[in-house]
Image (cartoon, rainbow, N blue to C red; front, side):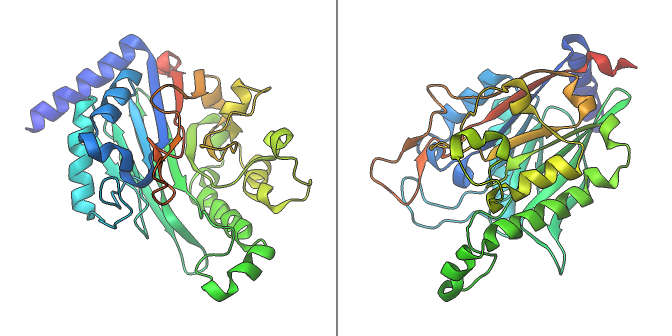
Length: 318
């Protein structure tokens, strides 16, 4: 078995060295791909296979509801991993990793290549990362690709604010401030722990549940709006570059069923030089469609759109 694993890894890395490309796919798939339960996820995995990803990051990877209902059915961590090992095999991924998850909204990574978990991030006594985050490393030749995944607090009111205080909490913008604290904690635990990260290969992706002022031509918010806090922090305090805005500077491409761009991929300048393509993928399958029966707030196939980035790894030979 050990020999087979080593052989698989060598073959996978050899394929990368020949093709020279690495394709990274991120998607918030809404409640473990709620839409896919009716056909055993066949449409979903067929679509993923067609994208030819080398690494996938799935946000909200855990199953939470019975198919086509809002009736709770939470799978265990072991069940979640077993389901994803089966699904990942359909699109050619051997490795499956689960992020830290204080609640039932983890990120899950599948990959053609083995990874090492550098850090699983749930917060501390002062700062909670409500949906968890993770930092994984992929060794590609002599270089290391650092993958940071996250999913921040989704509400306008603050974390764990009781129902009778939520309107006041919204008015005080406590949800925005909590997300800003989550983001600072995540960055300090990951990219900011490496003084030379600008020259290293880092990508941070996820559902940020917040908008960036670089897209304010769509939103029209005041300059001092707290909804910008998260991305203002990233742009000012980290080496990260918003790769979608870099590739599409004159566009604001929604990543949801509405007009908001709240899913992002950030890369360091060194990795940016290797990016060949980056796009929000809207096609006949991924285009969000509101559930016709108005079951909860569910969409088909998800209320978010995926992001696909292709990198040229031939430059990793040095």
